[in-house]
Length: 169
View 1 (tube, rainbow, N blue to C red):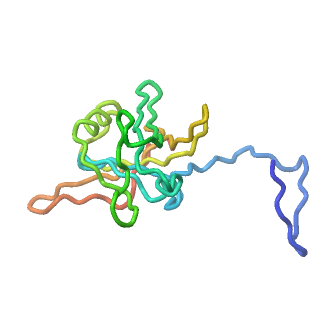
View 2 (view 1 turned 90 degrees about the vertical axis):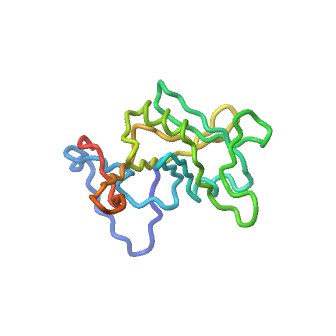
View 3 (view 1 turned 60 degrees about the vertical axis):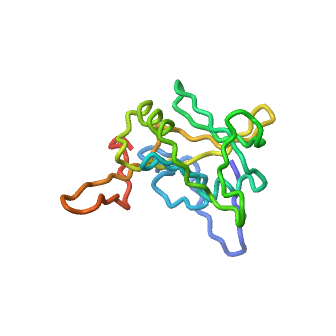
């Protein structure tokens, strides 16, 4: 384990064997604000990446979107424009910004694979992975923030700003 950088005057209480982690629960990372962490969203037949994804690969204009249906993971792998399945994940003119992309068939496939409600918005946090000389951002499709949408009579649909998490979390 990493040793903290101590400043003069810092007080450290030595606990030795008097301390253990019994009774503690690990708080899931999804419960914290994560603007600077890579994330993707699925909403209204659209697919989004956030700026943090782009910032991980500042020179990448195209990625391949890879899905492992058995492991329920999705990965974004930087690639050149001419590679099979190359997807422009950012605007290609002007300031580099994430791109919101309509993808009805892909959206339907993911919703079906994960048994999601197509009326809700799903947000997933990613992790940077390095394997076999490749860097990619991987997302666990089973660890989602779900933003429910309601359809009040006579009004336009409203999407909750507060995520709903699985009860077991």
